[in-house]
Length: 367
Ligand SMILES: NC(=O)c1ccc[n+]([C@@H]2O[C@H](COP(=O)([O-])OP(=O)(O)OC[C@H]3O[C@@H](n4cnc5c(N)ncnc54)[C@H](O)[C@@H]3O)[C@@H](O)[C@H]2O)c1
Ligand SMILES: [Zn+2]
Image (cartoon, rainbow, N blue to C red; front, side):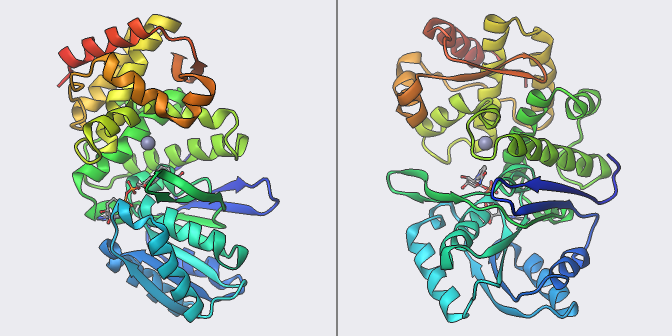
């Protein structure tokens, strides 16, 4: 893969297809893509990236695309709700969106989940375009067509699979992204490198770029991580098999986030902890080479993600782990690694081993 803009295609099970573009700067290619297709555009965007939405809007106008309206949303996780959805439907009705319109969503994972679900449900489904603006959304959340809002009872409980026809990834927008949000995306990049075990794993093992300045190295990493997600989604659009591997590091991460309270640890920090535990369990259960964990701990240290696990007894953890709906149905499942690139779903990890890993990782951290 070169550093120039590249086009990847996502195939959908419903016979329509979505494209994922990695842009090498600017918005003209996006606007030209829309202009080549019929239909007006309705924009929804995260207020934090008003400047990006404005540029997209201008590019669309310059290409003769009619923009029906533009709605800014102040983003917090709480905005992924039925309440905001209802406000969006009203705005969509007022803008007189018809089934041949495009919904164009500009923002992080919260905004693409919310805007994507509005597009999936309004008029029984309107075509949509995602312009992800966080690292997490560029390498993960914006890709794959899973869209949802939260209920008080739990995250992402109301949603759909609604593939965006175009995901337009422009890494330059990350120049304003705060450190914590970089780290969130990096957690997923670590996960992807481990389940891939190929070019991304090798490249990061050779050199780990510092957070911040956009560079060809980052552009390559973002494009490759997006490609890994695309490959997995293509093999398993509705999450029966391989898409499970994307949960690497997330069994513990979700539990830590719940126990510590959302917000105390960022998702990236929690995934970093979860990955270290999963690697430890992989060593013990599947004979993974311990040098893999050392390598990954080096990356985490470089990115400020090498934090000790909180002192979590297994007794505290287990009930939370088992609250997960899949765990209730199938028992606890861990995504572990035999080697980089060889993930396995393992359902018989002894509690004693998990407890031992938790103890060890609370005492030792690689920073
Ligand atoms: N659909 C999926 O497959 C999938 C996968 C993973 C996560 N998610 C969802 O994604 C959400 C998290 O996404 P996220 O991490 O992108 O969070 P987010 O959308 O909340 O964005 C994080 C923060 O960054 C700000 N922001 C966005 N772009 C910016 C930019 N370019 N510069 C400066 N600030 C910017 C936002 O306003 C917000 O404050 C969660 O709701 C999660 O459930 C979905
Ligand atoms: Zn994650």
